Length: 300
Image (cartoon, rainbow, N blue to C red; front, side, top):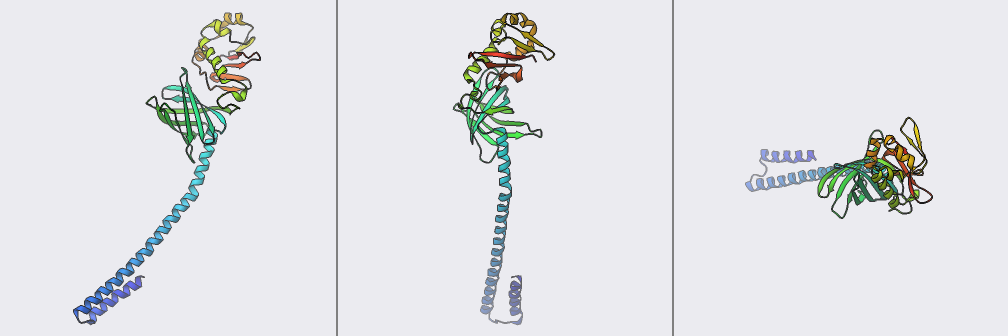
């Protein structure tokens, strides 16, 4: 192509030097023709180069999509399955703004529901969904509260979620670590159904423990006797309510009373042994009679 342009240019010069086309009109016509041929040739070359460039860019974009998208999608979904397993009650604990909270997130494929409770008993409920091919999700409710969140894992395999949002019109930051998870039972709305407990009954008893710990007589009535109370060094066996009331002030330290008096009453850890609060310092279960009773006390 470049040789053609050079040849046409040399021809034009030769005609001018040898005097070919003596008339002004002939010279002008020859010049116009040469310029048109040059323009046509140059434009054709530019069009070819533009087509080659467009093809190269298109191929690069296709290559990037082929290599990058499936890998990211796969990694994100693995993280979602770790952080919010499907058909599980997934329990997280941490902070929402200034409040310490305990949250349950329930996932059915891409649909999510969540609720959290603060230590003073305030609750909030949400509906949400996963964002496509990512470890991000959103929560919102009818009150106008909302969160944008994502799932993380650190070098030790600890799963956490974090995000920002608005609660009651205030901007808040939410950071939570995974605490535990267990299967959804026959009734997805009954948190403990897979373990044979009724959530409303169990959490009512948890609230009763919290409210009664400062009253020795009321607290003693909530215990299944005999009970062994551990302080880490040795166990003290308490046979009945009377013995519990007598040993209450000396045996149950102030730290224990304060921790129980400030405990969460919902979305608690549970297994075949029962339901525990505050990392296991107290356990309770449902007895054959249908009554809930405290079965284990381990002083912090």
